[in-house]
Image (cartoon, rainbow over all chains, first blue to last red; front, side, top):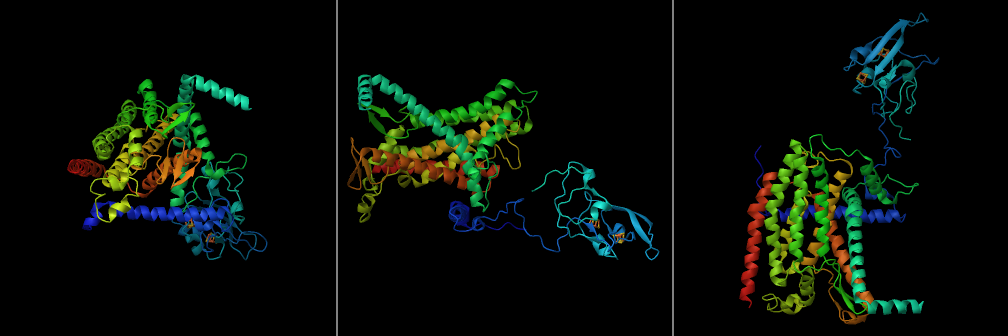
Length: 180
Length: 392
Ligand code: SF4
Ligand code: SF4
């Protein structure tokens, strides 16, 4: 791609610099004005800045955002999953580990004895959710803050995946920090 | 109460030497407090907050004492605590003495230069006239330049003794940059000195206060305009607009701040201070802020009339503002406020430049220094000189 030719005024540099400085100082004075009004309680501070004071304030996540997985339950509380391995097969990161066992109910063929997801490998693609024929796995807990001192904390087991509390921490993990 | 004051007055009048000695101590303490407070504490807060406000952010505001956040002012204290508590690492192959000396060299040269900067005119105390300068040196501006030139030794030493190739390259960049611009810095301000005919900051300010644009050769003879110009003070910036722009640019180069921060290159190329940690690193940072205050001060003195306020005249014990008599003390206070406001403006403007412009490439810096700034400064000086001779 050829370099765009600069005009003489642009090559003088100072006019262009003044334009840039005018822009930044306009932002400075406008925000300073809004900050001052906000300090007097006349308006909300949002007009002076785009900052979201995480973790006290969180932006609302869209409903379709893919977050930490959960396993949905039957009415009796057991997992809906029938251990068909569809999700494990679809997973591009190869991070779902399922061990199947016989289900006591003859109408249902199998159930997972172990269902582990290694979240340190998961790429949040959502293929597992798409692949599941039973609507047994969903990514709608709204939890993104997966940080632990230890990789083991990121391996979620069946018991943990059955809860949908976004602030839950696995029993075997030491959390790095909790926002609240 | 009265008797105590009276006896103090009597004692002071009887011992002129005591007055001078006390004044010298007071001046030094005042100046060092200002420099350390602004250069060491306030400016790093200003840098954080101003950049944040310019970029629609809040800026650092989490450090709190007992729940009081005070707009992030405590971050400086937190920084200082961190700097002191951190490990003071000296590379195994470095010379420990020189490695420790470098940051102090960098900051002390900048601080010493404040000795010759006046923060006001002359005041009369108990019959003694006291110059509001720590060391009223007749060659003040030369002293500032000398100290400025010395400042690069700290940087060079830091890069050289760290025994690290990256810091060595950083200090080579610093040396080349500062030396290239030293010439231009000196030449840009010479045009203004042709008007003032003095190297003493106090004389420069006195000249700017005593003249108006109507008295300047050529400008004053312009038909119609001459009368209007007579109301405008003859500040250096009006006489030497090009000189001012060039000098301001050159001071940013000397401070090695963005857009000329190649010696550090904190965002990607690594600079001379890579082997420094803790308080020594912070001293390098501080020397940058102290220099920024120093140059704001020099610019105000040389180009913006120092403490002069248009319309205000201070005589012997009387102050006149646009024809109205004022108490002398309020006149002095107005001058001090004018000086402080001008310096604050330039500190703000330096920060504005630092947070608005992208960094130059190395060849662009050299091109700008040798092929643009130097010829322009020479031309500016030549034109000023020729016009000055013609006007005689
Ligand atoms: S979201 Fe994608 S990567 Fe993560 S477990 Fe599901 S299929 Fe695997
Ligand atoms: S696809 Fe659904 S039902 Fe099949 S193993 Fe995965 S979660 Fe269980």
